[in-house]
Image 1: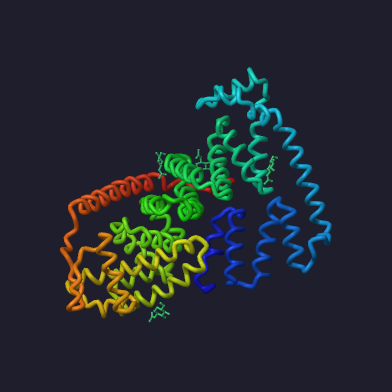
Image 2: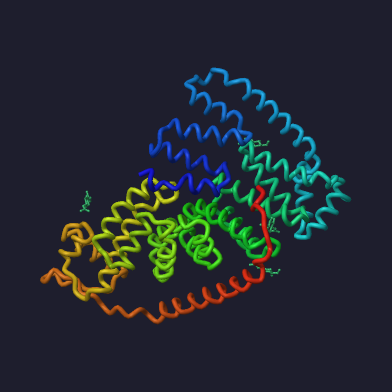
Length: 435
Ligand SMILES: *[C@@H]1O[C@H](CO)[C@@H](O)[C@H](O)[C@H]1NC(C)=O
Ligand SMILES: *[C@@H]1O[C@H](CO)[C@@H](O)[C@H](O)[C@H]1NC(C)=O
Ligand SMILES: *[C@@H]1O[C@H](CO)[C@@H](O)[C@H](O)[C@H]1NC(C)=O
Ligand SMILES: *[C@@H]1O[C@H](CO)[C@@H](O)[C@H](O)[C@H]1NC(C)=O
């Protein structure tokens, strides 16, 4: 199953702190030798300031007991971290203390210049330490205190006039909210970042591409945990600037988009668009989940789709983001097979349908009865003949309108994007978000 594991691919586009939950999941799944994962973990930790955590992993890796001393280098590093912590604490104290006072917070407004003047003149805080606050927030992130990071970065964004740093602070805040599993706030930050990327006029096309690639990966945490995530991922990833990014830099994201579409039965109108994207990306990326849709919608190969569906089950079982929606996926995937089958046939024998769906005839009948009862299927059962007779297949006017307008907004924003890209293609670039 390691063949379909995307952890190392995805990790390239995540902050290293976000990789730890993925590694923890891999340990549970036993896809790799435990030692190998610990080594990767230690390697990541050594680039952070989480020294105690690193020392624990080191001990585990070298068969030491909890009470045993870790090498000297760890305690030296620990001293350095503590010194730095104290230093940053001291240099930012006037500002952080002022921002804990309710009477100060009440005075702050949208107007950052006003806030700075208020703090300088009335509260008598030297605003020269604002950049230190940013540094301190980053340091708190590095030692793994995400709640303090989020708080400091929020304060920083209320005060700083430096647009680039505020943008960086937003990335840091987003990461912190993800790591604390604050999905509502993380969703808000995600939307803000999306806006900020769309409005940013200073970045080159390449920088925009890199930042969008990161956002696509970071957003997976939110979309597969937030209750509105299944709608959100479809809305965002199908926007032309994002579907283009997926195609250009990270076609493996198609796995998540496909899974989301299959799990979200109200979004059937995006299937056509998705199949096109899968076909365009199929040279660079394919897995059982994308192949399932291809079997069904390109080749009308029902046996093949059945086969792929069984493979999908194993892929979902071992995917950090998708495990939670496995059952729903399987149920809906069967529905997709069934619907496609129905589109080509008017009368279907329940017996042969059962075979297609790997169910007994009785199971298949119960399943279809439930679909009809829940208004997910327009059909009648003829029990005497053992057949299902399809109702009218004409899509409702409502759906036709939705589909038509959807295409329209896709096209017009795609056009604007293309024109802008042409106009800006001469600019050059450097590396993305600085958090
Ligand atoms: C984070 O820092 C704050 C303030 O220094 C402290 O009260 C809190 O316990 C820390 N939290 C963690 C998880 O270390
Ligand atoms: C704009 O994008 C550039 C490059 O990606 C980035 O360095 C900068 O911080 C962004 N600025 C704002 C205000 O979003
Ligand atoms: C049918 O499903 C059962 C589990 O319900 C599974 O064990 C079996 O392998 C499947 N057979 C086929 C041909 O898919
Ligand atoms: C291109 O640059 C113009 C102005 O320089 C800006 O308005 C536009 O948003 C930019 N578009 C892209 C896609 O970079």
